[in-house]
Length: 281
Image 1 (cartoon, rainbow, N blue to C red):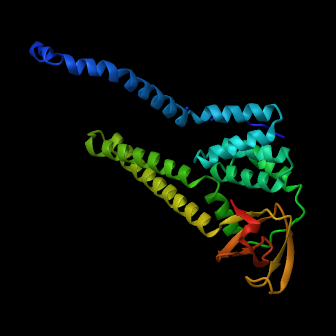
Image 2: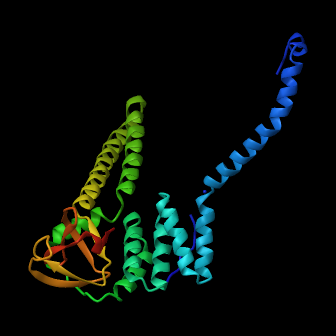
């Protein structure tokens, strides 16, 4: 199993001094308390703004010492403090895998891949974790063009597509400016056609960013955390039992109510289960 422990970054007027002896004496009394207050405040501020890399490295050290539960606590704390990164989710997935919490391991590998779809270590470890699940669900037939398009759109994150868009549009602007200000025919042609090309490519990447965002919004997925759960035909306990799923299974979320969630499996089967039985990726 691959371990990834790379972190994550004066002038005054003399006449005014003479009449201020009482004030100065008072200030001499007050200053020590003021300095103590500043020291206490700065100390607490430094503690509250501690570099998250320190905690991340500490968690990695605990993991290396096989203190997996302690490492998990720190990784989870970093996530609760909005420190989201591929490395944190990946290492957290590894720690959960080590303590045999397979659903949590799968969830965090999936979250790591959501931030970096081409992370080979996360892909490999996710396959290992999925190999320990009970349910082996074969995906139903899908249109080749649709599946290929979705794979391409999700091969990069929406942020990556946005970065490409900005870079390409910047190049397009530079080239089009050279077309406008240059007097040499060759430079004007290169600037014009190059600018149009990069402009079109930038707009395409912008479309990919929008498509990626829309895909994830309509394709919310979750991991089942209950050891064994019965899927119902309707969102109530008295409805017909359709089939059974086990912890670690990945499902697509179709819709949700207050207490129930409708899911869909890769083979097309659908049904309802309690919201508490799964966690969103």
